[in-house]
Image 1 (cartoon, rainbow, N blue to C red):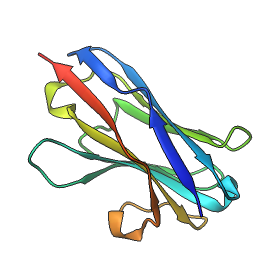
Image 2 (tube, rainbow, N blue to C red; image 1 turned 45 degrees about the vertical axis):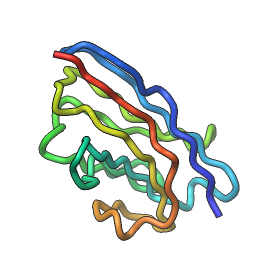
Image 3 (tube, one colour; image 1 turned 180 degrees about the vertical axis):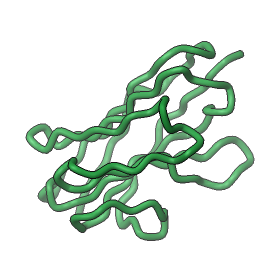
Image 4 (cartoon, rainbow, N blue to C red; image 1 turned 45 degrees about the horizontal axis):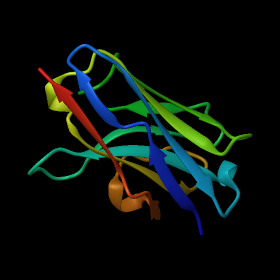
Length: 124
């Protein structure tokens, strides 16, 4: 079992930055690949970024590539999403997810554990 708690969301103007964090507890964090997903208002949940258990491999969605960066600190049991050059279309609830495994995974159905989500709102 893994418990995930996201933080760092909020309201920001277009062009600004936010850093989301996800704190994990309850199991060996370094055994899990981690992912960030988001659900814009009225839309389905979509993949944003994923990172392997060692942090050596990452995969970023094309829609945010070059603006968002995913990283993890296995010593602190955290995964972060640095979001720069934010756009109004980045407005969504952002979720952290965990999947036992060494690689990285972009499908939400592959993930076993989810956080409650944190709201990110980007104003124009």
